[in-house]
Each structure stands twice: as structure tokens, then as C-alpha cells.
Length: 487
Ligand code: NAP
Image (cartoon, rainbow, N blue to C red; front, side, top):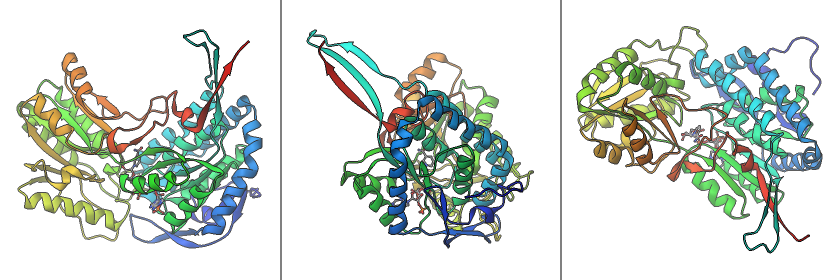
């Protein structure tokens, strides 16, 4: 691609709707409409890759692999650092683009871009600190040397809810480790991925190191990529259902898998919690991204003594939120990603009401062209209602009353998921005891936000395998090689 002499407007959807990004070239095509969730109108159309383009992406990733692997760590680090700088320079345009295609409020989109760029900065630093090991065996028979090598060509599949951050959380460590990648972004939000491909090129990422494919046939296209013996890694973020399908697909060629899957986060508030701290945390844990987050608080368990005050405080904060198009700077809660998503939320709320739940605020979608659902608080929800089992993925907060710590823990763990959980208490002993008792990969202790590039992000049970970020995230894209040495 030749960069235009005129400044590029990264927020222009048409700019990124030129084709697939393979081997450092744009392959033109059309076929996937991108919808503005705030109006239901088509914003742009991107290319639809088939099996031939998937093959071309693997060929490009392979052609670049040896050179990238041999690129000194310091040089890889500096390229990643330039990606951080370019993303930061274009932060406002990228945030507007994310708001346009995803619908999230501009303030959420700005937060996402800052968070996403940090993965490039973090992995620019980690690229120069890849660990190794040298030991003598306990028996004294020989020496053990462990080196870490790039795992190979990596397929990265990302969801629509954080179109920038879910991609950088994978591209950063993969490139730092020395791997070349094929990114398959979600069909709802491909423009951000293509914008980042442009920025990566400007930052000096060599052709073929990052390839981006969009497709209307994610199953067959990703199956063909995983079937190619040159591809050695799958890093997936998305729903548990699709994750299961991909694990089965990857099993055929025994491809290494990192899976960041769905969540059903409990939010526990004990009688001794600081009410205003708990309410602040609840608003972040529930309403970041209008509830469309894997870490979103899905079930609020509140102890008897503080329950009514918590419900009143939460309802008044939720009712005060301004709902509107994401790109309107005044908006605090943007539209949902699709009409189907609104219908799913509506179904869960109606079902809960049929089972005896009471609506404290919100509760029914407005008649509008955009895909809106109002901030909603429910009480008296039976703990076995589907809304307590499924990801709501929207601005709905069901609040359940509990009496004892044992009951709260039992309810919190009554799910196949184990991604995130939140605990609010001022009793330090209880805080650690409950945190140990909760089956989740991440706990927010008196805190509604846990995502940080320097921390290991991921879940237990059916919320996933492996961790992204932190000091171990880079190892997901490396294989240890052990040398048994006599000298
Ligand atoms: P999704 O439906 O599972 O889709 C995720 C990605 O997988 C998209 O790129 C999608 O492509 C692709 N895909 C769909 N079917 C596929 C198939 N048969 N084979 C291969 N790829 C396939 O999830 P989503 O609705 O985009 O995202 C929401 C989900 O992601 C929620 O469950 C949320 O909890 C989870 N999530 C988890 C984390 C985490 O870190 N644990 C973070 C964010 C989101 P198309 O768009 O083309 O269908």
C-alpha cells in the first residue's frame, strides 16, 4: 500500500473498506456489510474471504515467518513501541471508528483504545525479557537448559465487543514472541482491525507478519487454516459455544489453543461493604461497554442488611444514564451490537418477570431504528432463571438477596463459567476467604475493573484456557525447548 500524501482520516469507515490485508497488500473485495448499531444503516462493506484467500494468508505468514523470527528482540520491541505510539497518536480517530461500528459510547471507546495500545507498550517491553532457565538435575546426572522459541504461525480470532483491545492483546505477545499472525476479526467490527493493519504497516511491521481476513464463512475458513500443518497456534476470544467448536477443530491437527471465553460474573456485596464504593464499582462492572463485556457483572448478590439501599442507589444511577448513539459525546450507554442482541436481552428479562422478578427501572426496549436497550434493574429474580445462567451482555442488573457467606459462595459458583467475580467488603479476612472460595480466574476486590495489560487475564472452568497479558502472556506464543546437557 502507498500511503496518501494527505493526512489519513482513520475514523472514515470507507478508508478501511478496501479489501483483505494479506502479505502487506490490500486484496480488494466486497460482501460483508458493516452496520451502524445506532441507526441500523450500513456504514461500509468489507471483503469476504474464501478458502483461496485463507491459503494466501497462510502463505504470506509463512513467507514472513523466518525473517520475523530472526529479527532481534530489541528490533521487534521497537516496532511494537512504534505501534503503541501510532495508536496513541490516532486515538481519537480510532475511538470514533469503534463507536461507529460497535455502537459503544465514545468515552468507552476512548478507554478501549488506551487499553488496547498499552498491550503494544507492555509487549514491547516483554519482547526483550523472554525467560530461559539453566539448572542441574536433582540427581546430578546432567544439566537442564530451557529455551523458549516462537510457536509458529498463529490464527487469532476476535469478537466484536472490544474490536481493538482483543486484537492487540493477541498481536502484541505474538509479535513479541516472534510469530507471524492471521487475524480474523468479528464480522460486525472489521473496520477497527483494518485500521490497525494500516497503523502496523506505518510502524514498520514487515509485510506478511500481520494478515487480516474477514469472512462470512468463519467455520470453513478457520477450519482450513487450522488444518494446515504450518499453523501451530489458535488464540481465540469469543463465546464458549464457538470456543468448544474450535477446540474440536484444533484437535484434528493438535494445534495449541488459548481460549478466552464467556463469563457470568457474580458481584457480591456484604453488609459491611462501603455502600458508595460498592455502587461505584457496580456501575463500572455492569455498565462499561453498556454491559457488553465478558467481565460484566451478570448477577448481583447483596446481603440482607444492605440490599434495599444498594437496589435504590443502583436504580437511581442506572435511570440517570443517558442512552444514545455512541458517537454523541453526551452518551453514557450506547446501543447494543445487533437487533438480535436486543431481542436476547428482552427475552431474558421477560422470562425473569414471568418467573416473579420485579422491574425497578428500565425493562423494555424502545421502538427505535437503532439497537437500544435501557439500563435496567431487576429484583426478586429466582436464582435458577435463565438470566442467572446465561450471559446477559447488556445493561441489565438482576439483584439477588442473600443471608450468609456460605449461601453467597454457593450461588456465585453455581455456573459453568469462571472468568471474573467481584467482592465488596471492608473485612479483610472475609475478603481473602471469599476470594479463595470463588471459582474464577480474576477477582475484583472492592474494585469494578480488573483488566490491565500487566496482569494475567483469563478464566477457569468453561471460561477458557490460558492467560493473556502479564508476564506469562508471551509464553502462550512460545514453546519451551529443553536441552539435556553433559559437559
Ligand atoms: P462469537 O460469536 O463466539 O464470535 C467470536 C469470533 O468467532 C468472531 O470473529 C466470529 O466470527 C468467530 N466465529 C463464529 N463462529 C465461528 C466458527 N464456527 N468457527 C470459527 N470462528 C467463528 O462471540 P461474539 O458474539 O463475537 O463475542 C461475545 C462473546 O465473547 C461473549 O461470550 C464474551 O463473553 C466473549 N468474550 C470473552 C472475552 C474473554 O477475554 N474471555 C473477551 C471478550 C469477549 P463472525 O463475527 O464472522 O461470526
